[in-house]
Image (cartoon, rainbow, N blue to C red; front, side):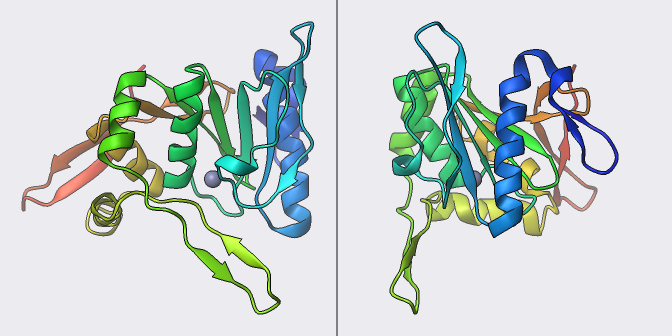
Length: 221
Ligand SMILES: [Zn+2]
């Protein structure tokens, strides 16, 4: 995606990422109107052409991915600048167990774009069994409607995530990339850079002179 000042996005400049960019524009406009998460699925028609679903509103979870023929990717937008959540990761693992090439894109209102891709299927299966998700809670609203939240990491990983962010001072994306690697999830977190290419986020854990853990982005080529 090419971003210019003022938030204009040029979808023509990005070659094979064009469909993602178009989807992103749809859900960003939808999010700007109602301040809710929105998502779109991508599939292929009989001739192999990429097609996309309408934008659906609501929290993403496995049951709410819009259906479309030959679905191979989805994208959703968060209502803040957060990277993919633990619920996004578990839902992604459900998809790649069926289709190893599946990609989940996660965007933010300011135009950050992340992607989850599979690096090792057996690792993803093992992680899913060893560290099963905790089901998301359901909260009843005063008007009788309810919100079902996404599943989360088990408590031990939630605690570690909070520690890395709190004492370690890491951002959410650094903490997420760190846990994905440490727990051998078989899942990589990518982030789009300014020229439209996705790079894998890798977090290095080191110690300062007092023995406190610190987390930094490891920039590889
Ligand atoms: Zn999400």
